Image 1 (cartoon, rainbow, N blue to C red):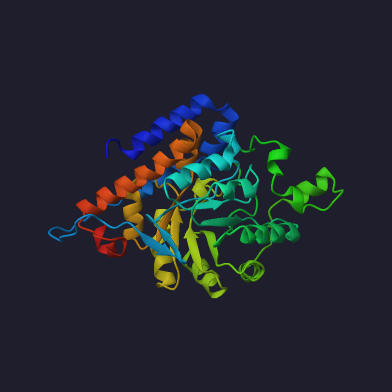
Image 2 (image 1 turned 120 degrees about the vertical axis):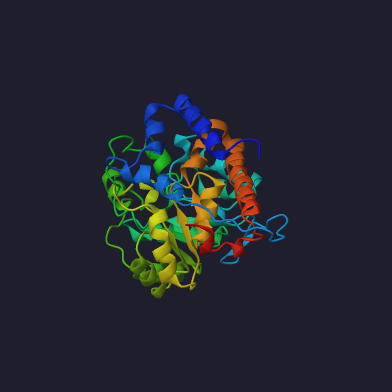
Length: 351
């Protein structure tokens, strides 16, 4: 490990600030409101300290893990983030190339700026599809069936965005209508006006727990619910048929002063009681952060902004380097903490 991942991410973020128009940079970097949740998301992981084991004869750590039938080289997934052409001209296609080169798993977003089929063509491994339920449910159904037909192995239903949270900067994505509609277009009713299209593609703020079963029924895929910060919500989602949950405050981009994922994770893990995978994202910027999350009970982690900084700074090779950096640092932390395999990470390792 020649350089700390945090140093690489700082370098990539600075490169992105130089290379991108201010509106594009702010769209990626911004948090909601006063950006308190954005700041605290990262700081919360850093408050934990490690209690390493010694003389365990661990040898080289095994970072592989299984989630819902998917074998991962490490317990880290590329989170769904919208509009990658804001960061790079090739958008999600270039991201997919980097993810494939690193042997990772990508969650492809509903609001991609490249055609879904083009993105999937660059993914050599399994992939998941992220779902925003829009007001016109027939459009969501069409997209979900399309993703399932292209080989998605799970759906990730994002539930913490009934509408976009207020931001002082980067509030509006700097994308064209053509980019916005690139995947929606073939599912729109013929002859619809711009106003009708815009209204139909807004988030449906009225969805409930029955959405989980609906998505499973139309796709045949397991549904993971993303955007939970409470134990009771996690339990309710599992009771409604969710195959897993993601603890997330949406990268601090939705409700400012929402608690950090690192704070919410232990209570969600306790409520789930091993019934399903618990994933987590938000402020995870090092392999040691991943170590802490797994020791607190997470099955795997997701990362979003770090991937976009790598994409903006160096395209597919930047995405690959970011993912490899997480792998190197997690391997390093596990080896020094006396942990032989992901399954051996436990709560007594952190305080």
